[in-house]
Structure formats: C-alpha cells, structure tokens
Length: 187
Length: 401
Image (cartoon, rainbow over all chains, first blue to last red; front, side, top):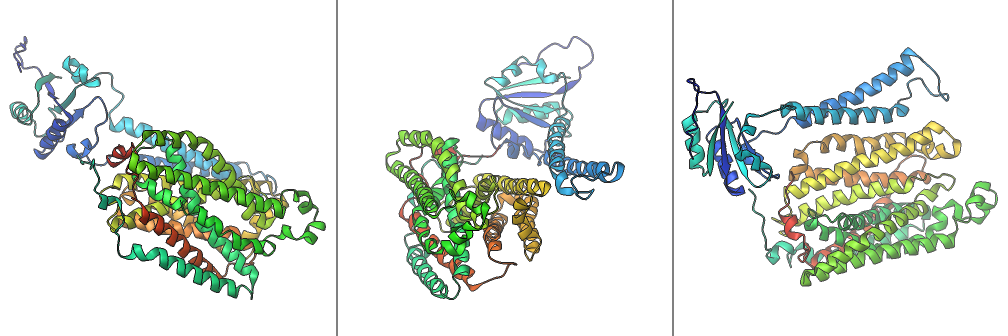
C-alpha cells in the first residue's frame, strides 16, 4: 500500500477512518472477529450480498427495530380503538343497528389496521433512524476502490470516532488480520 | 460461522433400532384397539355421547395428518429449501391418512346420532332442512367422505413414496414432478378439506351455515401440524435422529409459521364471528348464541385466550422460538388449544354446557394410540430426512438473515 498521497495543505487533513479490502468471506469473518476482540465498536463490514453470521463476528447487539415495531404497533392499535370509542360513544353518540354505543367488536378491524400501520411505521422509521438514514453522502464514497463493494469485493471500515482508534495501531491491526489493501479515508 | 454437514451418517437420519420406538407400533395398536373396544362397548349405554366424543378425537388427529399433507404440498409448491430436513416427518404424519380414513367407518352407524338432518321425519317438518336436502343426504355424505378421504390418502401416499424413492436414486426429476403436481394437489386439498369440514362438523347444526367454516378448520389444523412438527423434531432429536440436522434456524422458522397461523386462526375466527354478530340474523347467530349464552360462555372466552391471546404474546419473542424448553411448551400448549377448538366445534351440538365424560378420554386415547402407533411405524421404517432431496444441503446450511 502507498499512502504518500500528498497533503498539500500544511495542516493534517481530518481523517474519517480507514478502509480495508478483504479478500474472502472467511477473511472477512476473521477480520471482524479480530476487531471485535480488540475492543473496536465503530466499525462496519461492507459486502455485495448478505453474509450470514457477520453480526456475530462483529459483536453487534440485537437490533432495536423490533422494539420500535412493538411499541408503535401496540400504540397504533390503542390509538385506533380510542379514536373509535371517542367518535362513537363520546363526541357523536349514534345508535347503529340497535347495538351499544361502544360496540368494540365492530372496531376491531380498524384497531387491527392501525396496529399494522403503527408497526410498519415503526419498522420503516425505526430502521432509518437507527441506520442514520437518509444521508446524501458518505466519506467512504470518496474511495474509488470502494465502488467495487456492490460488485465483487469485501471491505471493512473502521471509523476514527472509535475510542480505540489510533491511526498507526489500527492500520497495523488490519494488516495483521490479513487485509489486502488499506486506505485512509479523509472526512 | 456455523459449518453445516455436507454428508450425513445414517445414525443421524434414522431412529434407533431398539428401545421405545420398536415397541411403539405394537403398543399403540394394542392400546388403541382396547380403548376403542371399551368405548364401543360402553357406547351401548349412550351412543350419542360416544359418537360425539369419537368425532372430536378422530377429527383432532385427522386434522393433524391433513395439516401434514398441507405442509408437504406447500413446501413443494413454494420450492422451499429451508424445510427439507423436517419435510419427511410431515410426510410421515400425512402418511397416517390412509389409516385414519379407515377410522371413519365407526362413524357410519353414528350418522343418526350425530346429524339431525339424517332423520327423514325431521326434514319433513322443517322447511329449511328440506331446502338443504339435496346436499344433506346420507348417500351424498358418504360419497363425499369416500372421495375426500380417498384423495387425501392417495396424495399423502404418493408424495411420501416418491420422496422415499428419491432417497436412493437422488433423481431431480422426482422433485420436479412433485412440484409440478403440487399446485393441482393444493387446489384439491383446499376444496376437499372445506367440503369435509362442512359435512362432518358444520352440519352438526344443520340450520346454520358459514362459508368461511372450511378456512377456519384449515387454520386450526395448520396450527396443529406446526406444533406437532416442532414437538416431533424435539423428540426425534432427543432420540438421536435429526440431531445436528435440525438447528435453531429451522425451529425459528417453524416457530414463525406457528405464530403466523395462530394469528391467522384468530383472524378467521373473528371474521366469522364479527359478520354474524353485526348482521344479527337469527338463523346465523344461533350457532354463536349456543356458545355464548349458555354454559359454554366461559369455555368460549377461555378458547380465545388460550388459542390466541397467550400464545400471541408468548411467540412474539425471538428467543422463545429459539430455545428448546419454550418451543416444547408452545407445541404442547397449542396442541391442547387445538383439541379444545375441535371440542368447541362439536360438543355444543350435544351439550348445554361443557362437561367431561369418560368417552372423551377413551376415544382420545384410542384414536391417539393408533395414530402414534402408525406414525412410529412410518418414522422407523425409513430415514427421517429425505436423503436424496436436491435441496438437502441448502436446508442443512440454512440460516435466518
């Protein structure tokens, strides 16, 4: 690797992190496990297709999306029922086909749909929020090599915001773990 | 990364030669015959209760076998890879269908005890029954039963036989043929199981009708088979077969399907109820009135809670679907719930309020022991995994995303 890319400014440019190209899926698992065991948390794996077991190798915690779905789903269902109770029994009481004002069985379909809507919203927006999306750009896109991530290459990136980050140390660790190419990414 | 086995040693795919599995077929047969003979002997004191109890027990086990047939057809129809390791068990459960078809015979002398519409004098003074007479006819009833049971037996037998043939040859053509026929077979299954549910269960209250009844029966039977498959896989694993083949990834998916069908059952049950409740037409509400306004009310509420409320919130959790203890609990719980459901469909036709009778136990153990005996025989005879299936390796390596 050569990192003699000249920094014309006198000041050291701000560094986003480091990008390492990995040669195979097995090596990718090894690299992620190595980073995980070394105590890194702010790193990510980039692959052209889903790779099973990476979340374990990376030491990722369980996603919070299901929790968002549960809360918004139950909340949506409760809100749906509450709305119908208020409309039919409080705000504008109207006897329909001789049934009680609060005829809950008739309200179940709408309660169910509101629950589904809430759950879907929880999944969609919960995922966006946790993935910090939408965003228009990412420093990794500056790397030409990284374009192959959607084609035939595997990468691991470590962000400088990681508490364990040390430019030389992290680069050495990645090389020891078998990274093929290593590139410093500017912020 | 989990490494999946690419070749199986025969111990993993076969039940042990000795031990309880060797005895089960004989013990099951003897127990079943003895219990049913005792029940039949006692039936002379009260044929009505015997036939209703027998109908509950027989339909319960039949619905599991039918669910097995549905599961097998569904896997072929969707060209599923993940489920190959548990498909043989479902094939064997469905394989009991020809035998369960024979157990329809004891119901024939009970037609008059079970079905009000079979009494000519009742039809004569009842315009509604007279109107339905072309369908509710004994000859037509028996012909439909023979046709339904015959078609199911044929399908179950053929799908199982072809799958076993593939164990040796590994021919991909067999999978292709089974897939090609699965669409037609699924249509046949859907229509016949609906007709059967109309005839055997819905016509217990011949004045009443519900077009969704067949779907309701289907939803319950699918909950039953998924619970049974999870239970059987856990048992077989303990016995050494399937060990290391069925992983938590497979259990997780079976658990997800089970959760889905628990919700589906509630969805269908509620759809049927809500339309009838909302329209409040007497000839439609009588079926629910029977189950709501007399002694059956607590039972009906309990059924909703046991069959839907509790399992919904229990199976919601990922960990529940990935641990043996919680899976075993879910499987047993939902099999009990399914039995309570079948009981709830049949018994209010006879009883004002739910009550245990010795015949319930005798017929359940009788039919159940025969079912277990035949199933054990089928499971023992061949590998419990379809060894020649082209998607076996895919199934062994299966992981949830």
